[in-house]
Image 1 (cartoon, rainbow, N blue to C red):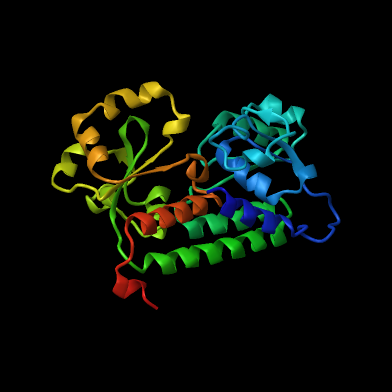
Image 2 (cartoon, rainbow, N blue to C red):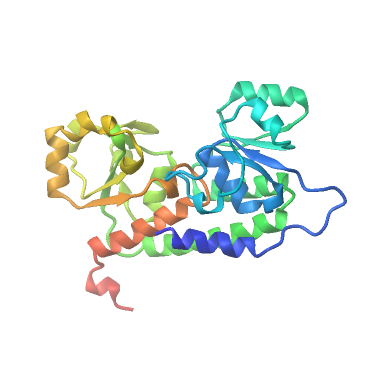
Length: 286
């Protein structure tokens, strides 16, 4: 499943970045599993001052690239110790660290809050510019755009099943979430969005009695505390649903957040859709 994304990142890495510049490229640090994927996909190795403590964990889509770099938890003292010129933050995380670093002269770069694949493409351009790697960013965006358009073309064919996304503890995803975007790219209809829910909300089990899903998509179960699963997984309605409808399990790493690797999750789900819900013969024929 990780092959498509790894190949895309490998192709992007073949570009050596911008031509030699008058000033050295900034040394950058990342403080979260979300920012790691941008830094490790776009920067030269000598630019990487540090990655987050999660960079090599099972939730990280770039764990194979994270070895050998210092790991930090986002404290200002850690950033200063690795001599980072630029620090990449999530939209809302580590406000105190960002404030302190800003006062000490380090450049604080915050990601926006991307939702769609096109939002992520724009974010790649922004991060690449901050790293002094505009050509590498442009190359990665071209790869992402091709993959996105291919997914959209495939999604327009065949069956669009109603999919229910479920995370540990009963978390779900409605409209205006990146999970909704991934489901759409993969050719599914997000049942929770169709029920009128926006954002990150609990799975509305009671509503599913009259609007059941045709497939359940489960993720993050392998990287979460088992105690989170107890109450929700024992609910009789949920147990009946997973016994009656197909279940697709997606590893957490590709869509741990909205980033370049979310297309890996979309491609995996698109392949599972075609396997579980084959196109009618009159559609499948050229």
